[in-house]
Length: 282
Image 1: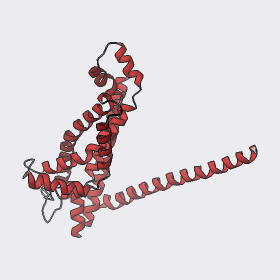
Image 2 (image 1 turned 135 degrees about the vertical axis):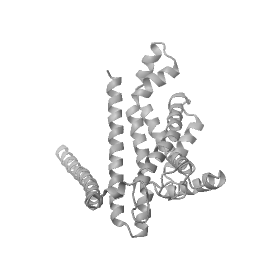
Image 3 (image 1 turned 90 degrees about the vertical axis):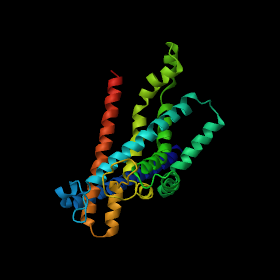
Image 4 (image 1 turned 45 degrees about the horizontal axis):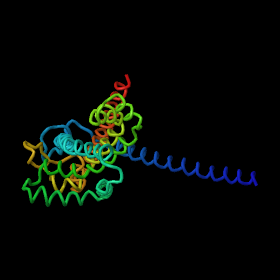
């Protein structure tokens, strides 16, 4: 009986191992194929004209869209990151366990995370563009994106804070530190890698967003002279060029620039996280 069970266990383990390796291989292959396709199609179409300042019918430069992407990402993160992080601190450190309100907030955050981005776009258009009278603007797009990424930042930050061992808090309390000092001097720095992971995911969603921004920020290919001016991001720029069907080569080049931008943001954030952890550990 023991030999039979051992054989069954070995066979099931082999099947599971094959499935795991197959899934990993398929995932890696898809990523490599996507990146390879973008690089092969994008590199030959890169040219200095694509990085000129003025967009016109003769030159569909991506520079205004690139600057708009950085601006709207910065604005959205300035709005969403503090609210999301402080909300997570309240939920994990200050709210009582079993609090009904906390459960409702968590359920709402998880529900909002699964809503399609076009729904956020329609809400942003009705509320920010029409009701508040902001029009199609950088500010309307940034606020819409902030609402969209807020649940993601809040949930990832909360999980990062909950993963900090309780003896960190107990040791701080034992040395006479108060609740506020313990949270901001001990718990929050220990959770920085997890918090930055959530912020990286949020930035990735912002950079690749189109539907929500078409309804709120507009599609004007120009660097805005005020927060209430319309602005086109790289993702919207790609959508506009591909939908016209006249600038497919420039679309491939823009997708390559967008890919490079995402990689730079990810590696920069990861580098900063490692530096902060290393500095904190001495």
